[in-house]
Length: 462
Ligand code: F6P
Image (cartoon, rainbow, N blue to C red):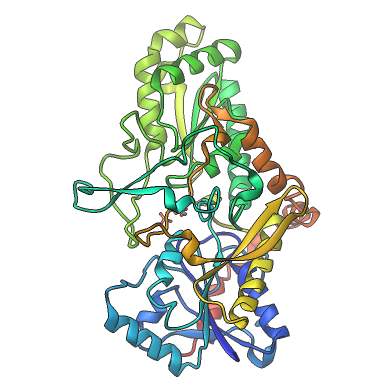
């Protein structure tokens, strides 16, 4: 192969540029030209196929900076419909005209689904990214445990149920996880943990109950990682909220310390397994439910269950309305500079994706494994291994052993899971960067210069 394409799809993460950086550097070593396709799969639908040569004359362009968040190529949530054979034909023809012989898609489970329609027509591999950490398997063959329920949902769509994966007491071992962790997750947790710690002191000073909502869709990895921020309670989407237990835990903790900090995943569900986020639900272009309002739903429950009397009885003159507040960490946890762990492994995974293409692989994933003996190491994994019997790829959810539903907190296995990722995940240069950049006097005088402006000048068309 002399020329390969690369695109970034789905929601951005802080480590995308690091992945591209790793891929471009490996390609340079191998004498391969890398063409960046703009705005994810969107570029493929454009007959002009907007693109940028990322290593002209086998030199990386200066805009490619592994420490800069987001994607210099841009991203979108548009995917190709497998049934649209005509569109797929057109895309393959465009890639052929651009002399692209292989494709790297940097993305998560949605992107892995999204590359299925054409990976039999052009060698395509996935380099992983997601802040949700939901790309992977808790153990090999986990997709075989999915059952497609007859009847589908109310809209006539498909409804899946996972059979035994939630049965505690199985043979779960961290060593067996497939794609232990994905670049983007560590930085997102790093940001959210800072939010939790900062909100704590306000909750303490004002004797309040704080409910902090973090992203993660239907997977609780992000919420769980916030255990580093020492919240009193963590609620994850995999375990329906047990209201009486929650209320009694909140009361006990408040009586003791006159403040409570709760972290909840945006996708938490009630006893009937309905998402607690806003009732008026909308979906993004990829068909994912937009989740917002979980913390607010919890707040309403706690206001009703605790009432003003509870706070007054403990010497707090605030009403329940004002004593219980919510904050969303929101997109700050998805943007900005990646921390060392993410930068390092994203670059490694990007580099490996190039090697996989050159070795003739297609529909394969560049993954990060972990074992007690070897620590982190790279592997490639067949895309088919992520598919259930109906061909669907599911977002990984927390293995039940990671969570303690009685304490509403992380379990010891969950702690064992986090330790290899986060111990030493921040580099000294990350700390130095904050010191040097936050109050850089130049920031007051210079306008923000967007990378998009520079990249736009490099865009070429078919
Ligand atoms: O999948 C990443 C993610 O950040 C989710 O955690 C979140 O639900 C979603 O994307 C938000 O997407 P958008 O930026 O399109 O609102």
